[in-house]
Length: 191
Image 1 (cartoon, rainbow, N blue to C red):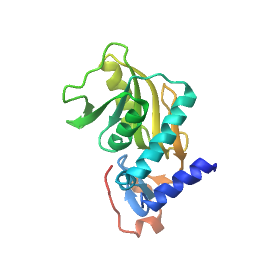
Image 2: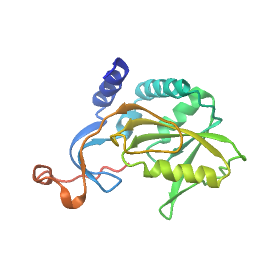
Image 3: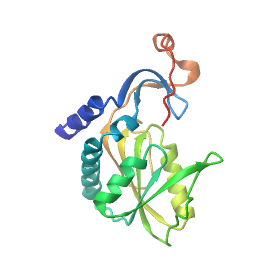
């Protein structure tokens, strides 16, 4: 783990954004660890630092984007701060009938380059929805930036992706939860 990753992990620990217990993730999988990024996102000093590091990583890929798109709820705060630092336009997608959509008058120009910013990726479902949404709206997705990739490298996208922290905690299907974890009362903190 490099110095930046240690710093990032310290930020998550200090803000109590990394939780231990028995959790049902948005994906439906169970885990003994949960990233509650809402906890880190209430501390603007932490948000500013994480966004600074994320923008640096995106710049390292040489991506050019005019707009940042974040899926609600998890990506809202970090997406806005990344857009602010990059001096990019900021929009967000939200659920309507359980599908991510652009509302509130948000549109994309034909070919408009868009960076997706998300807080935590486990399977990548919300990012995949955003990729489709951008294309359906006529834009061009150019990359994905996430605070935490907890997919163990399994979440793959057809655009470049970067994360500040790659931590893979075991996840389990509901019918395969280990006995020790099953004894702990389950929590579903929400994303």
